[in-house]
Amino acid sequence: MKYERKWFRMWKIMSFALSILIQVYWYRIRKKSNSEWEKLWEKIGREFRQTLFELEGLLIKVGQMLSIRADLLPNGFIRQIQDLVDQVPPSPWEDIKKVLEREWDCPIEEILLSIDKKAVASASIGEVYRGQLKDGTEVAIKVQRPTIQSVIKTDFRSLAIIIWFAQHFAPVPKEFINFNRLFQELKHVIERELDFKKEMETVNHFRQRFSSFSRLTIPKVYPEFSTSQVLVMEWIDGVRITDVDFLDQENIDREELSQRLIRVFLPQWLEAGVFHADPHAGNVLVKSDGTLVLLDFGMVGEISKKDALNFQELLQAILLKNYSKAAEALLDLGFLLPEVNLKTIESLLKEAVTIDLDQLKEMDLLAVKKEMNDIVKSLPIQVPTRFVFLGRSFVTIEGMLHTLNLNKEILEIVKPAFMEWLNQTNPNKWKFVLKWIQAQPIFQIFQSISDLLETPQRSLAQKEIQQQREFYFAIYENQKKQTFYLGVLGLLGVFSGIYLQNPMMWKISLGWFGISFVGYVVSSWRQRKWLKLMEKKGVTRK
Image (cartoon, rainbow, N blue to C red; front, side, top):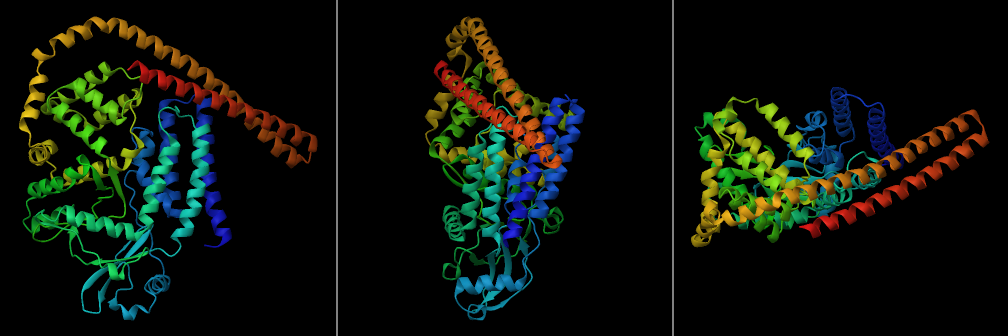
């Protein structure tokens, strides 16, 4: 990429981010209505989507990740980007050929009998071509885009600056999301995806992990032809799993297929190890005989042993209707902020789990989902950054199940696979039965009486702490707003002085801006220091 192109790309990203910040603050100053805010976020979402497709590269990956953060972002914005597909125009064949010959250190004719010069798939990081090895073996050749390394460096540099501004200037509660951690997680995943040798290791890991799984195919890799920028794999014919016309034509049982799909992904979500983080329909195929085909292991996440155990405890607690245990598991996983009242979470879990499915069918599901999102945003609940890609994997598979089973309850599809997994991973039935017995009301009566007696005092203390937090938080926020507005006025004065060629005006304005900037940094530092202190106190209280 040329030097000028890099700076144009960075300027485009930075100017778009700055325009969003200005629009948001302008709407806050003018105290716009909820409907006007919704229109603004839809407009920003459309512009964001257009910018993503214009610049391609890393930004499409960012957009895909943001599209599943309905817990953090406005509904209008999410609606505009929720169906983003990482599909960009392929590179010129001559550039791809140069990459192949550089990585193989020889003309492609020495490795391949033939190759289709038209890409069968083209994403932001790699492109896939169909070819034949010298022995006639059909292969899929994944080639890294020639300019991607330069694009990634520029985009990471731009995102780092945007993250810094978001951390210090964005009107988002700073204890609600850790922007820096989000950036580091994204960077880690993208850098891993850039190294095709790591993807080769992941493919081999999944092939070994599911070697005993019937009617599942994962393509083998040819390591002798694979490098950090070229991945040569077995070619497998298949159709997208969401092609219901094909499934019906081949008499493939959709429900049985759905259960096998769940059996593949359930252990990935609930057991320690790596999981497929990008299982969209183009990466999950089905053969004419109903065999599942799993492709593209470039984007993966990892679940630690501790998180896996906590997830299993959460599931068991919900099944046994032990909502206090479920709330504790959510807290251990990091889904609850330190100051949360666990009794409130217990009540919400109880209401959510005991919903009558027959009544749910009669409800407006879109309205229910919107209401649930609003409730979640109003509560001290967060989605830990390390689970962003796990959520992406889960939501994508859930969408496939809905497509395959339009008139059936997803829970009924999942239940057999879950019970099978439970029997395989929990051979000690006595332990499970003991937990079930302990969860019954007769064994919880003494704890319930104790909780009942302590509830009034705990509620008053919780309310007082919350009021104190809101009061001090408002003070720091007001200080930051005032210094921010003064800084904006200072900048306007600088530009006006330069435009009017008035040295005194722009020098005074520059000094004004400097003082405001220092004031803003100090206020932000004091707020962060206070929030950390409050979080420590919140943990101690528990």
